[in-house]
Image 1 (tube, rainbow, N blue to C red):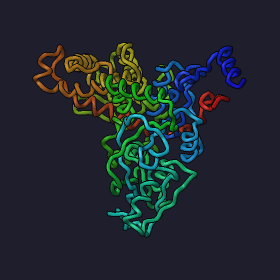
Image 2: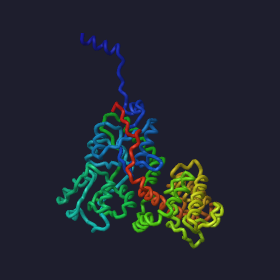
Image 3: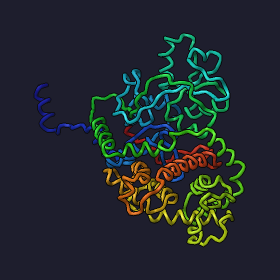
Image 4: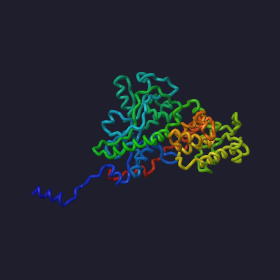
Length: 462
């Protein structure tokens, strides 16, 4: 009888087919990703959500054809617990692959290498080894790879001690070091590179490990469907250059930290900018531009000096040539109102000349380069980019071609000839850094950005 009833069950009831994880995600219509609120992962920028991890996660969600849902836990420890428990599909949070974590999570392909660095305040003596930290406070984020690394290092440096803080992010600890509240912290090299431009007192004492890989983490599971999709996704964006472009967008302009130049800029934000800020705001607002972008250009041009004059005769805050001033109907280049308004309109005009096929922010960076070197020289550089079999619509490729305009081998075959092509590259990279700093120091950006409501919704099924 028992056997008969089992046969009847299989005969009259359809076999239940369990969906793969990817199919479940598509059925629910959303990919749930846990991340951190930081400059290297996810943050609210002037144009909406931004950050390397956010960009990659959004691109992956688009590829799956679902909505991206972001979760921002209160701490790194909470983030890791959610990942291990399966509450989320992916942790895209700048996580270092470590031995301990590898036992608990499944990692996707590595997409970036970083180094963990001991950071100190330049006003203090630089420590040369971990054994010299006994007289100072070393603080790291609890549950971080830094805390894990220090535990390993304690085997060789028994006197090593530190505090693991569960209430802060790495950026807050960097600020505490900058303000001499604590003596030391450990930070990933990419986080330090972004923050050092704002927290100009920070210095690297030494690396505490060899380069390590960052990757997305997933809960351990027998279901390989999402893991295989992630592998395929990263293979694709590595091969088509999208990953390189996103990393360049996030870090490409911060490679050369200039302590003295940044310190002067921070001082000029306090002493010079207030006199001209409303002029930048008004000029930018009329054109639908970010005033901080125009202000960053003005600083690169003249250090916000209305009487600035170059050896070639350009002058004023926006350093307009006679021809540009005439085209923009600027009568007095030394009048800051006229100069800023004329410079903003000229940049806007140049921006509109850049082909629509060029995506933002590459379009903005190319317009800046054209503002500096001339539109037609930029077009020559884009043609050279094609000859190099690279993408003329990506700033990361065009900025490699621009310096070639100064080499006869290349410029002799262009329509507009020689140009000091290295200048627009430095021009754009400087402005990008100034722009970032202005965004950071602007009062409205100092307040913590609330996480958008649509990024906090968790489905009942998880």
